Each structure stands twice: as C-alpha cells, then as structure tokens.
Image (tube, rainbow, N blue to C red):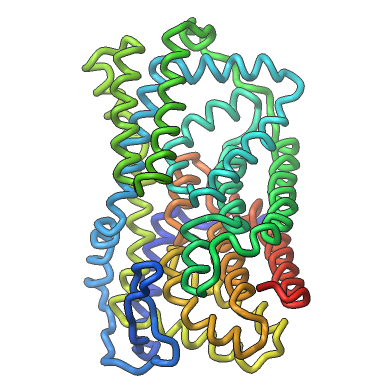
Amino acid sequence: MSRLHLPHPLVLLVAGILIAAGATWLLPAGQFDRREDAATGRIVVVPGTYHAVEPAPVGLFDAMVAIPRGAAQAADVIFLVFLVGGAFTVVDRTGALRAAVDRLAAGLRTREVLVIPLAGTLFAILGALENMLEEFIALVPVLLILTRALGFDALTAIAMSAGAAMVGASFSPINPFQVGIAQRLAELPLLSGGLYRIAFMVPALGIWLGGTVLHARRTRTRPEAAEPDAAATSMDWRHGTVLALVLAAFAIYVFGVIRLGWGFDQLSAVFFIMGVIAGLIGRLGIDGTARAYADGFREMALAALIIGFARAIFVVLEDGRVIDTIVQGLFTPIAELPAALSAIGMMVAQTAIHVPVPSVSGQAVLTMPVLVPLSDLLGFGPQVAVLAYQYGAGLCDLLTPTNGALMAAIAAAGVRYEDWLRFALPLWLALFVLGAIAVVVGIGVGLR
C-alpha cells in the first residue's frame, strides 16, 4: 500500500464505466420479476424468478452517454452539493466560521485531539439517524478550517465526519434507508434487534475513531496561524447570529425529514435561504452574497461532477441487464454452505454487490427479497440476513470508488484516493470482522 499510486478520481470512474460496459458484453443478461411491496411502496424483486432476457450490450458511445444520464439521476444530490456548498461559502465570508474555530482552538489548546471523538460521535449519530453522507460534502471546507487550525490534516477531517457517519449508518439500529427498509422487506418489526445492534455499534465507533485519533497524532503539524483579520479572530453579535442561523437550518431540516418527509431538494432550499440571510446579516450585501455563492459553486464543481460519474456505472449495468445476473451469481453458491458460513457469505456477497449498486436502499430492495427466503431455509431467520446486508453493503461505502459521496468528499478535501485507502482499509477489515462476529453470534443466540 505504501507505493500505491492511483490516478485522478475522474479517471478511476471513467475506467469503472468502461469496465461496466465490458461486463454487459461478457455476462449473460437476466432479470428477476418485480412487484410493488405494500409495506414500503417500492418495487422489489420476486425471489426464484430469475430468467434470461434479450442481451443489451452497451457500446462505447452509449457508455459515455450514461455520464450525463447518471448526473440527471443524481440531480438532487448534485444541486445539494452546489447550494449547500455555496451557502457555507457565504457563511465563511462573514467571518463567523473562522471566529468560531479560533475560539474553539484557543479553548482546547493542548487538548485538540478531543475534537475528533466529539465531532466523530456527532457525525456518527447523524449517520445512524438519517444515513447522512452527501450532506457532509458541502461541509468539507468548514471542516478543513477547523482541522488546519488544530494542526490536523485533511484526511482527518474526512475520517471524523463522512467516515464516522458511514460507520454509524452501517451499525445503526434505526437508519431508515438501510435497516428500516431491510426490516420492512423482511417483515420484521422496525427497531427489532435494536439493542443488539447498539451493542456492536459502540465498539465499531471505537475502532474507527481510535484509528482516526492515531492517524491525527501521527501526522499532526504546527497549527496554521490565523489570518490577520479582526473578523476572523474575534466574535461579535453578527457572527453569533450567523452561526445560530446555521444551527436553525439543520434543526428545520431534521424536523422536515422526521415529520414532513423531506429530502435533498428541501435541504438545498433551506440552506440556500439560510445563506442569503447570513450574507445580509454579515454585511456582504446582495452582490457580495451572490459572488460568495458563485465562488462556492466553483469550489464544489468537481465534487458534484464526481457524483454523476459514479452514478453512470450503475446506469450502464442496468441498461445492459446484468445487475440481476450479478446478484443471482453471488447468492446462489451461498445456499450450499453451513449456516454460519452462509451468513458470512451473505456479507461478502453484499459487499461485492455494493460496488456496482452504490445505493444502500436500492441494494436492499434488490437483495432482501432473495435473501429472506434463503435465510429461512438455512435456519437463522431474516434478522441475521438484515445484519449481513447492513454490514456488507454499509461498510463497503468506506472503500468503493462507486460511492460518489465518498469520492466527492475526498476530492473536495484534496485527499488522494490511495491515501484514503491506505488509512481506511485496515479499519474496514477490523469492522468487517466485527460485523461477521455479530452475524455469527446472532445465529448462536437465535436473534429474531
């Protein structure tokens, strides 16, 4: 790993698109029948109905057409990155963020490393509650201000935010986009097995945040000196009001998600409004606020494009009718294994499937209808199958280049993908082993 040098994320993703197109020529085309699931309102596969269909290999030109199509499918996320990123650029221009970071750094002094477990726990909770990940992309510039002021590198900023959120989401007892959908499809009560999941979520966060702290201590440098700007070193009532606006925007969005069913579009609107008000309170004026938004859009452009390129890989495989073939090929051999090995095999298969299917909710509706009957036949029940899905698919988000949010976050921070792999892979292995232990113990205790 020390000599690993990978190309730019866009090169990696274009290569992934070409590999996906090649797979549509090599793999047999096939599909499951599908039906609408009354519990979730989603279209799910019908187990045991896999059949061959007319091949639809994707050519080179169509593979390139998949890039704008992928961006169109991910438009809500892309606009989220632009509008929230622009809003935080406005907030930064008011001096409020720098004033808050200066005050925090001065208050911690020799205890700067405490920021990592405190912030990491907060982000992990957000990931566990609402599968938050894309929302953090626009926060990267803010996090970089904080970590640089404390002497930590950009990788630490990503690890304690997006990385912690992914771990929290993977081990969550309540994440509606992972365990929530999977449990509905498995006809299990929501929150069932919650205490069992929490029991493994705690050491999982300990592993991730402990590794992040070790990295931060090993790479820490002299903290960056604050800029000689009074607005960035002393906090006044305007700064406090702007920061209160930011917190209010988050609170409004959380309320909207829980009570009103909001999504990314509403989050984008809330933060756009917040940015405009913050700019006016911060005395940027209408033109200054607009210029700050434009600068924020430029800074977020690469991150937004990466999301569209990553989505294109799934578009190509879906057009080529080989997604279901991959699922069938990975899960069929599992039925011949003993129960414990079969459950771990489900984790491995879910990890492999998550590379071409980077949506955790999409993967749930694709795989859970196949795995639930299989888990009943193997004698360990659907709750263990849900665990295998959570740990396999969720933890894969930490590594796979088809996770557009991860690639966008590290690109926004200026972290090379190989450097992220060098840091994250050993921790992922430890977390995967922990997940496998949870699955096997779940079989042993009869988790239902």
